[in-house]
Length: 222
Image (spheres, rainbow, N blue to C red):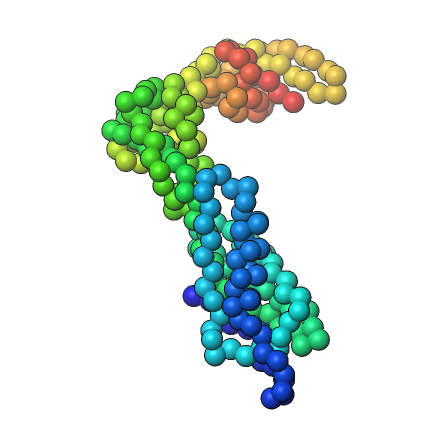
């Protein structure tokens, strides 16, 4: 549903009215350009202004994205005329992105390594799925589930992790790197983590630090 105006209709009875379809076309072109780099096949729909609306004709229509708005799914775009008879309005826009996403093909237990038979890649409107959904099968294959998953769920990156190469209570090598300084020590892992994940480590003096697992049994702190 489109929103109506911050400013108002053409002043005086002799003023040339704005072509409302030109407003819609301008917004459509703007959104098409702004979403050109999105992954997948993008389509844009712009709801036209109310035909009853009368605005002063504008030679320089300026579309813009309102603060906090993302050009993704059902959204809105503003368009303004700077003057001399300034006005502004907001139009409803639908951005669809046809691509592919990875879904679970069958129930998958927690901690299970993802195999070919566990996933299915389907065409879908990506704007209808949660952020972070995987779009290619290899992004999931060989990784492990952090929770049990039902069949038919879109797979998101945070649902999966690599092989845990550090386990809770394990003695790990702690490597400190900062400003050219390189110091090693030991500590006890306070959780499980895969390479590239962050983990807390309790050092010999009882201090708890955070670092990133850089290899099996090794945590790097910067």
